[in-house]
Length: 339
Image (cartoon, rainbow, N blue to C red; front, side):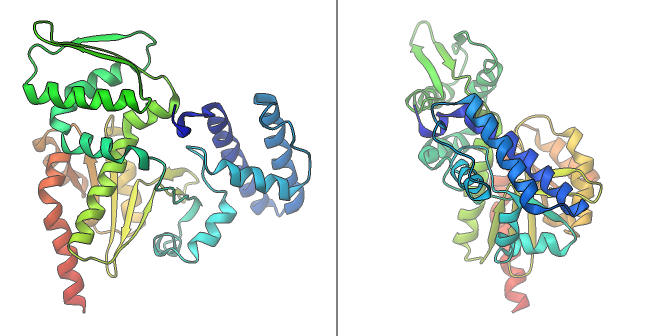
């Protein structure tokens, strides 16, 4: 089993505790409370819950104040889903143009972690999923349906094209080898049936329901930026505080010398987010032409209609592939003209 699937209970717990810690820090800032007292309280809560959930792993932990608390938090950063506390964000923003841009527009960055290696071991599989998306779409749909069940699933592939069967079986085998599936078998002609059982690990579910697509699009966009020699800085998944007090996680932010691009990625329900995207785009003063919403499964006509009515570029995955060169070329042209 892969490292990022291990200690999943700890990862979920630490993520929840980190959220509590950030909220406590915000309360401290607002009320002017003594920092050491608050941090010791955070540490004590963290230690107590970790000892309760996994006494073997943390049996040697003693109450040593803030220094020990910091050690536990730093250790937790290697676990999936856990990001730095806001004190580290302040240090990061001093040298990160994207975070500086956000803060310069009155946006408080609550959490940010530059964790680009989380799925490095799955790079080949992610590229296969993105490059062959049309061919694996049916399999992914069946896979998502089965994520909440502990039973094996059987799907008939008799009417699937050769490309769909080949690409889906290749993906399923890769998932089995990487621990995302607990079981997989394909029965050839005349049966044409796939039998599989996905892992119910929360990290696997998060990966399959959206994180893989974020990884693919990030890699895809960066490859074209480098290909056309556009200098850029990128931030993925910063969590910000909106003026109304609500938190919002942005998917992908790219800053060039002159422009700022914002990309949101959805592989599932998206309609309830459209108004919020408009509000955030206006708040950050990002021109509509530099706002992008990528909808993996939507039809071209629907994307085009949404783009006209919502003041942003709405593309499905195939549209992004077709238009990425022009998107980057426009950035490059702007930079040349600016020089």
